[in-house]
Image (cartoon, rainbow, N blue to C red; front, side, top):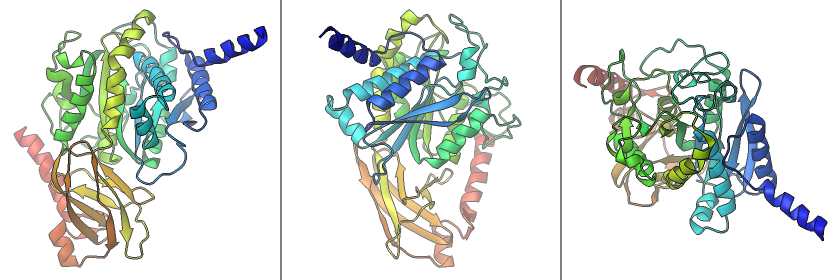
Length: 423
């Protein structure tokens, strides 16, 4: 009887997640334990290696997460991108624990995980973490990877040439993001309390701060406020010696960044991403961790739930086959496109209103109007897709050369000129 009791106690403690800092080995062990304890709800995988050959671990959470379910969106959180900004590592471990222990017990989270796959990477920079010092609130030791590069200045930039050599961590994240059709994302940092949203940069920025509006600025503001107002106090906007109305800021208005991850996700991968700054001190004392989890818990959950809003659908050709890799745009927001998945699926987060979806593939152009209502995603499938004539293609968005329409190219140029001359 005593042996049985001890066995149950030991087994239950596998589930115990304390409020302390977990080194890279402990972090990996926790993720492995979760994947073994919840095999039908989680899948552990590595997206690649760091400079020091450490795995970049991701835990996918959702009902049978490695099984494709039509129109089930994928979302992600990435923590510890700067190795010395460590609160996110622990907060994301507790989010994992919250998800798996709430499944089947909390109706909202159960429904969410039945209809969403959440991918969580607690640390994008485990090498930098190993070089960081507890109690260092404002320093930069451990910020970069083993080669000393800032990973949040290492992505290809739409507005400027990024001359920094691409690091293995960056390559791994880009390849991963382009393989999975992520719809919504956030990367977590430390140093202040604010939600930062695109654009982070503009042409010839030269360090001059100004508001640089993206085509989906209304959506990004709304997403950012979802997080800041669900956070226990971020929305006050006066933390860490900074002032951010509503606890949010446009990236370039705060300070321009070349090579940031959130702009790359949005422009190149079609995934709406924001940056979450969740602690004034970058590496605070461990006894503060319960407070950080309590402050961010509901915000982390509610932010990802926003993926189930806007529009979604599947694209079919004349033969009823799905159309993968079709280029899609929302009319009036043509600067940034997105693509259908290999199953022909697409998703786009939008606020309530009336919109027109444009679908491009070669010379095929289709437009469909639709309405978005509050609290739900509109289903809009494109069926019996037929090729448009050249004149129709010109009328609907420009004659396509390969996958690039002439008119949107001109729109991009005009948009950049507008940013440069009028903002």
